[in-house]
Length: 499
Image (tube, rainbow, N blue to C red; front, side, top):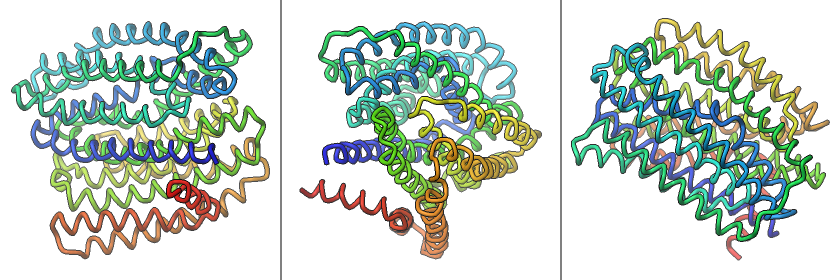
């Protein structure tokens, strides 16, 4: 009961943190877009793109540390503290390298990649410098968040992340508008906010690890390092696969058009935030099941997490289709022929497929075996990169979004049987018939009906809020109810909460 209660609390904490982050993303993006202009939001899109590329400078250390902490936490908190301290120096050195690379690259990036911007060249370059400083600090701060998540202290991690998300969006926007510093003030404030986030994570870690460091066996360190380096290589390939469209469109579109495109992509990213609340909660627990050789529990948890992933993805796609058009005025206006709303729901569908693949990758990461992960990433890269690159040629954002969605879902349905044959022996059909298809079909059917009903309602924000709440809630509940295992777990969580 204690284990289930802690898992429930972590899922709830992650959902609460995700709700704040998602709300901030959806509500702040149109405000930034409207108050600072499409060109300025194009720079926000570049900031998000650079943030996504940060794992290239992480060398797999954060992911490796997270798995190592989850592995050692039951054995010795002293060993955990040693691992956390050992990871800090190399990640700080890599952050410094990133700052120097970004500083030297800001001039050509501002001049050539973003050269047609209506914003002055010097402003763009200075904004890029501030982005680099903030992202470098966040790279180091990520170690603290990863450690807290792996220790299953996810309430603390999410509280810090939520506060930082509000500060770096609404706080920075208010500062920029109040001081008249515009886009420069917005990005300049990102640096002190990132420092405050780092300090908050470190304080939470010190409270969680009130022990002296203890030596970690060399064999364990070698195993963790191999896993980290493997993750680093996979991250590089995954980033090339998932971000090539953003990079190519940033080069081919005017900054205003890229701002409209980025607004849609930003709204669609809420899906990955939502499913991340499940993945972040179950990965440490799956790692513990692997360490304890509890294969039955591992398979059950993976299946339930799949159902929750599908239900959340369907619900958020419905939220985008209903709420964005009805409640967010900025999504109703096309810029340079790009409709942010259309981009949002197309990328939302693609992100739902990516979320399903990510759940399978968590299963492999929990086992610490990356060979199939690497093979799958390479195959997806070989297929997706040329197709998406072709789609993005000439700046066709809609064609790119359609291709992104199609490739993600096609690859998920074709590749996952091979993954399960290796890591879920004899369990693929049960996974399909019990956890994936019922939730997916029900979510699509109920979600489509909810969207049609919502569009038939009168206009106005009151009806919009009602349609949004009912549509997303009904879609999620219906999808989860189709999985008997998920229903039992949810009832258990609710009963434990009531008691």
